[in-house]
Image 1 (cartoon, helix red, strand yellow):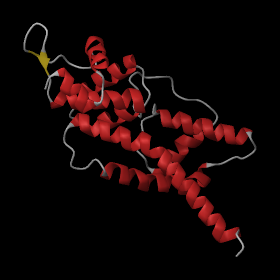
Image 2 (cartoon, helix red, strand yellow):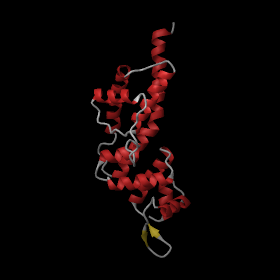
Image 3 (cartoon, rainbow, N blue to C red):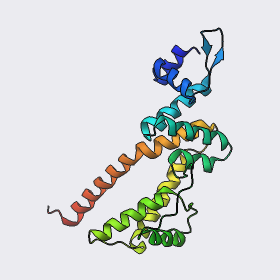
Image 4 (cartoon, one colour):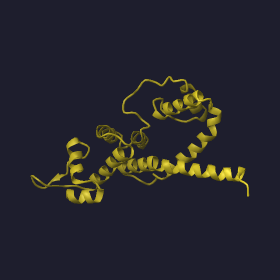
Amino acid sequence: MRMSELSRRSGVSVTTIKYYLREGLLPAGRRLSATQAEYDDDHLRRLRLIRALTGVRGLPVSAARDVLGALAEHAGDTHSLLGLTLGSIRLAEEPADDSPGSAEVDALIEELGWDVHKSAPARAALAETLTSLRTLGAPLDRRALLPYAHLAERTAVLDLDQLDGIEDPLEVAERALLLTVLLEPALLALRRLAQENESAHRHAEG
């Protein structure tokens, strides 16, 4: 396809496509002449993934380029590919988290038997949340978190089930990103609805 069709099918403007080409996010098309090139479905899938990384996950262009480079290195490793796409794996090692809640998170993950990397950003996020709750006088220990963790396990199974049968690495990455980031507000909304329903059963009169 020519660039105009690539733009139409991807929903990305020609100007932005040219910018991605200059910045190295999108590989060059096959040259037809000095001023024209043609593109294929691989370009289309990569464009959709770039849009997901920058628009949905909110990465700057430079970080998206780094993620795309790392994805190319791990094209045959679905586990690493998903981790890089979703931010579960850092592109560079960072110092270990030694915040007050980190030991509690480590103990929770060990008790669950989860295979989670030491540098996973979600570890630090959970530890920070636990520390904040304690500061506000609402302490939670890992025992209180266990039922929630088991619900998260079941959600993860549903998430990964959605990727079964997809063989193209770029499509796997894009689908995982959309399902995770865009679905999270829906999951939060479902929780609020379920809380209202449970409250009605427990406390509402009539």
